[in-house]
Image (cartoon, rainbow, N blue to C red; front, top):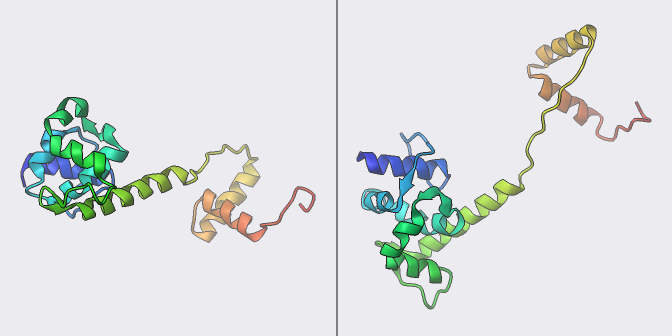
Length: 163
């Protein structure tokens, strides 16, 4: 595989725009020229490109410099969601597929930002309590976090007064 195509695929996989076997997702720097170089080898890149540029343009290095040289892409981005004004295809890919990919990527990014992240806590335990916690976690086959989650599941309605 061409090294430029490989680089573009690695970044698109890193951004969760594409899935490709044999490609390790990496956060590598890509330009618009790299992307256009890779589209003949992997048409899915052209399909995902409008969504990337609309919803996460910071991925493309020196985009402001390179975008004015690609007027078809600029025009497509301006009318992507207007069925009457948009062209039928973009680099041989039906524009309807580009719209679908852009909406999927938008929803993925939205869900990613709404997802609650885990919190880290530090516990101060006596040696006896620590040994008990370690023994219980080994018996249940999980770690400390899994054990605490099980306690919470066992007592979902627990209040300080009920303990």
